[in-house]
Image 1: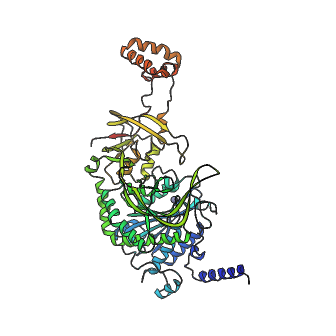
Image 2: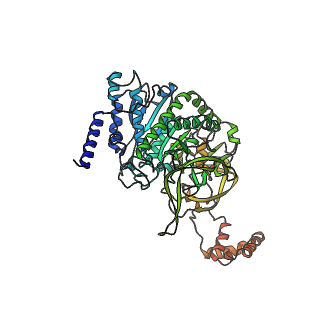
Image 3: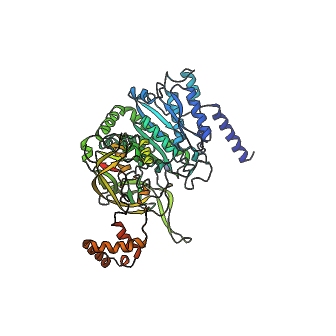
Length: 607
Ligand SMILES: [Zn+2]
């Protein structure tokens, strides 16, 4: 027999052995090289749900191409309703996989984890057999999960979030990535990246996710990805929003309790982890490490605004798929272990965090809308990198890094202090005119509480006069974003029609409200283009009207004449442009659109 035949027989034999155990997952059967398609994933989840009272399979929406968005609910008493689970005092952990379907570790690790959790849970759960039979069924399956992990934690598991992108399946979807053999595609069927959609919520999938999130308000969130970027030794890096966007008490708990314990456990199990960092120079670890605040358009940044810790996991794309899935599994188990012990403590901190954003103290503290890295604060860390050389390309003339397999530890500066670069004092309320219904609908999706004006009302508000808008040249996530905006504010008595919504900032989602509605919010609706029409001029004046009118205005108003002469003297482009000169006068007539550049949302400063 030649070598190929031997390999074939061996492969068939191991496959046959594995196939005998019905609880082996598709990924395990493949020896860690393949990940299942959508229908195979759903079938396995369905099987788990049928086998165990602890597991409930449902869906939280439907994708544009008609696929159900799957959700597994794992609870030790088989509860699958948020109120019922919350009444037991158990924490709710949301684990999300395949928001980027090419990054499928979370799906494979999560299905194994749910199986191992229910199979290990003694005396409860399976619908027909006793423990002996379960152990027989488990022969050949890894036994990594300790008993009792579900005592204080219930799990919501989304095996595939971006289901349509997942089924754009093929071997060429992730050029930088080392397996699986075939995988899904990064974005949705309409080419939207769900992990940029948390605030603007354009994708139907994200709208469904927000409804799920509001219904459950999970206490802790884990989102699982695969990185791109430089090579290094870590199979896995992580990020929690602890640089300023989240409640101080929760931030302290993440920094001082959760993360030290979790990273310690992972180091002990042979998967040393490191914070997810950028490099000061692109792909060059030796240039130094930078940690940034997670923008709220990303998952872990968004949940931080909702006063809930979110753990981002980024496995390293160059490590073999099997290693990445196993590391992810370890991450999840260790996180659950800590949450199981910390359930009461974390719940009390969550209550305090929700209370704090409703306090006058919070409202009187400048709220950070945007951050920048402080380049004057750094500390030094040991970074487990690999040796690499800088190559000057004879093809492009550029420089690239050739990473080797030789481990090397680098002593590097890390810049991990963020300072607020834009802050605002929150008003008592914001008010949105009824006609901006698309905006109101988005705020509703975020679970923001609002009251509608019952009748037409004149209200004293602070209004924003927007100025100097600039737009980016190309589209981003299906929209044309602003790149810059400024404004002046002024007080006025303004008319609001019945149905306009008043949004008090004293509510748990206060941080989301501020980021969505403040013009300079990080990912505000203004920035995403929801209010673009207010920048447009809709009425024009003819030159034959403006020429004589301008003359008359100058004759009647010496102050205006003085201002005009100064403008002519100081701005030569202006002085040479009939269009600009006439527009300058048009702006100063009562015919000019007084609502142009007025931000429709206003602030109510007093109770
Ligand atoms: Zn990703």
